[in-house]
Length: 302
Image (cartoon, rainbow, N blue to C red; front, side, top):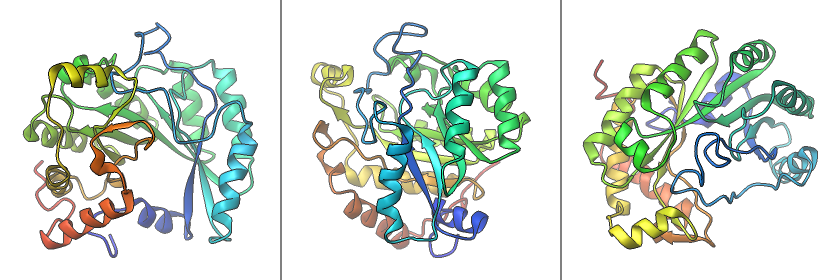
């Protein structure tokens, strides 16, 4: 874990590729089955439909080169993982997926693909193609879980169950494909114990990576209306950091921590306002970890 008390993504990339590696976020114009009526309408209650990345109407080449040129000024020998981030990036025909993925693999400096998607957006032929793709490049699949409790998943209109997520992970694991799970702390009516149980569930599944998010409310979302109506409480910065520390202590030491906290669209953020100023927040998290002896995996229970 080098200088950190947890297994950071930067450490993992340096160990695997021997150099600095960046993820370059791309919007390929995919839709989502929880928005277009296939699974539901409107998406998850926290979904605003906006992203902090490039727009799909711009070519993938232009999106990639725009970010790469900025990074290349400081890290001339860096490599890149192309990250399909916006919406559900396996929700298309196999031919469409092949056209997009194969094109990006040929971009200069790309050493792998990271594909963000949902556990209910796969077919057998897509699983098989991903297995073949995994034999040619470094591939990770990022799956939104958010919570391991079906009551919460139903409340946030997630459109899938814990069992759906389990089955998808098992299918990907059979094909030796790495999986990064996304979870959200502070979901309405979830307790600290429930948030810790989600970590235990991911340990049991043996996922390869994790992204932590703090629930935030953006303008124009269903969540904003529910927040005004139900007046549920949000975690304070201190509560979030303390729970995060306990989760890191529980997290299997082999699981790579890709993100400690989410970054909202500052222009649309309603609450919590303490998420503004991400660098200071990350410093506060690191300081808490050091002062309180947080070490990944030190309290893991099989």
